[in-house]
Length: 125
Image (cartoon, rainbow, N blue to C red; front, top):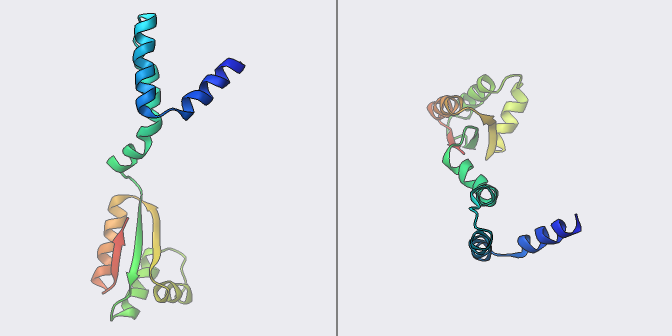
């Protein structure tokens, strides 16, 4: 197993260009195709790309309360279940703060619309 560990250590120190050259040389030497190993190497770098492609969890961030702070506090209490008046007031006054975290896109858009209607500045990330 020491040889495998040494090889993994060597591969981790290589650049993608060097790994690509290695795969080509390996395929030529042993007359095989390395489709699966290449897919594994690509999968390690592809995780951030997948997250950028289709985001399914969103955060609703309250940027500011605007002129109608009382209305915004009421909407925040409506959106965030179990939030008391003091907690909602502290949340609104401490903006920018996340109101909802890791919610579906439609829930995030609905919350954003309600908050903006009340006069708040909101962003969805």
